[in-house]
Length: 194
Image (cartoon, rainbow, N blue to C red; front, side):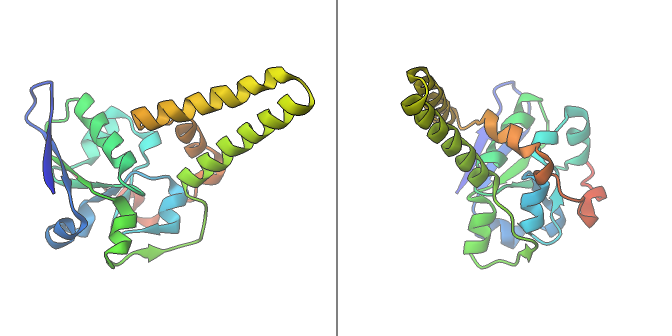
């Protein structure tokens, strides 16, 4: 797959979605930009990749650190697409590539990864949080006041909106929690230059 996502603002840059096999065959390791949290990066990452967590992105900093042809990587491809969209919204004039399927597809294809300490992925943390809130709302509605059923309804509506828009505010909040802010990896300061 080599689908090009053209920018609506008329700039010349493009975002491409490429398969893991195509990327592995044609990309130097220092071009990989991992947009996951520090904790997720510490758990598993592509050797030589650089960590630039999406929740910390600032236009002036990111546009200087990325180079044309950088490959955006996350867990499954969703956050990489959000990162690509953010670059498009900022009017970034260069090319960037989104790796289809993220680190999960990279691992499934048998390519090398660096394993670290085990931790819960951001997606699992969101599911645990949402499930706990909905369960607590149901228990409180049954035992304290029927008004707590609104907690379940609001959380359910939030999940529907998240599914439709592919954006989750709860995930962005959880990503900023202290347990998701691990120590900086050794290659944190080595950045792509434009």
